[in-house]
Image (cartoon, rainbow, N blue to C red; front, side):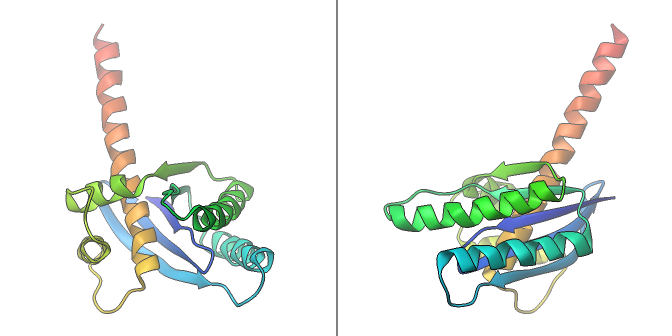
Length: 171
């Protein structure tokens, strides 16, 4: 059983989701979002670091995955998002976790079969895969989608490594 944390970074709302994954099955442990208080950017970044650090200490994930920054037309927004992502990366590194990074299109492709899926489609698939009902913050479902993508990707990598090992041992 591998415990994976997914992070959807944001300066106002940072989504997190922790799952346990084993042999292609995933189970929800906890999900939510860190909503920063009004304040300066440094104050909000500190809040993200502290709350994420507390989550990591409480739930002790084995692996971590985070969304890559998508740079759009608003450079200022991308810079602030990059700062929030940097703080999350530091908290994950401080907890001793290796971090996998996934583009939003990779996550959408992995969960829905389309790299252009809408957020609500991704959220629906997260709920189906984790057998969840009711409301879920979009930031939390995005973070869970990242964790699920990592679980799926690591499973494929393990299978490929296993096959490669078998081929080498037959030589």
